[in-house]
Amino acid sequence: MEEILLKCIVVDDSSLQRLSIVKLIKDHSNLKLVAEYNNAIETKNGLLDNEIDLIFLDIEMPVLTGFELLDDLPNKPQIIFVTGKTQYAFKAFDYDAVDYIHKPVTKERFNNAVNKAINLYKLKHQISAPPEDEDYIFVKSNLKNRKVFLNKLKYIQALGDYVKFVTEKENFVVLATMKSFEEQLPNDKFLRTHKSYIVNLDKIERYNSKNIEIDKQKLPLSRHKKSNLVEALSAIQ
Image (cartoon, rainbow, N blue to C red):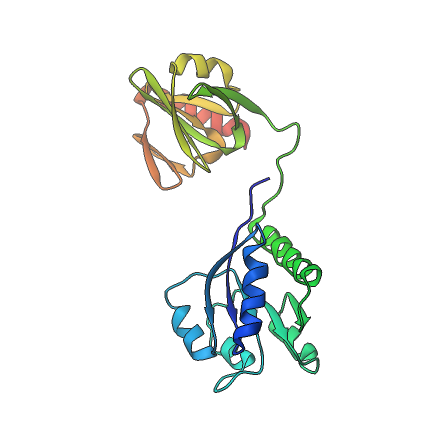
C-alpha cells in the first residue's frame, strides 16, 4: 500500500505541551512535522506558505482561541484538538474534529487519534492496497526486476534503444524494445498509437486526429492508428 505521510503542525501556547506533541510526531512514521506555533496569529500567517494535512490544536490560547483560528481559515485541514479542558469536546465536533485528546497525552491515545486521521485521508483520496489479482508485469531496471501494475501505467515511450515507462507514481527507463512490451501488454487495455508510443486506453482523457491527451500531456497519434483507437475505445465503453 502507498505510504501515507501527513504534513502537520502543532499549535499550543505551552512550550512543554508543544514539545511533548512534537516528540510523538517525530516518532510516528506517517507524520511529518512542518512547523510549530505558540499562538493562532503566527499559525494563520504560517499557513499562507504551507499546505498542511493535519493540525494538533490547543483551544485556550491568548488573543485568538483554537476555535477562532479555525473560523478564520478558508480551507481547513484535519483537526485533532489537544487540550487540558473537557468542556469543549461537544463544540469541537462542530468543527468536524478527527479527535479530541485530553492532556496529558499518552502515546497510545495519540496514535489512536492519528490512525483516525490516516483513515480519513485514505477515504478522501481513495487510497487502498492493490488487489492481489491486479494485473502487472515485471520490468528489468538497474539490474532489478520491478513490478509494474498495469492500472498505474499511463504510457510507454520509445527512446532509441531504451523504453520509458510513465506511471502514476514515477517514470523510469529500461533497455528494451517497444515490440517486446507490445506483446506482453493485454491488447484490450493497451494500444500502439504511434511508432514511439503504447498507451493505456483507460488513461486517455481526449483525442483528435493528431494527438492523444493523458493527464494533460499531448502524445502524437499516427494517422493510420486513429481507426484502431476509435475501435478500441468503443470496445471498453
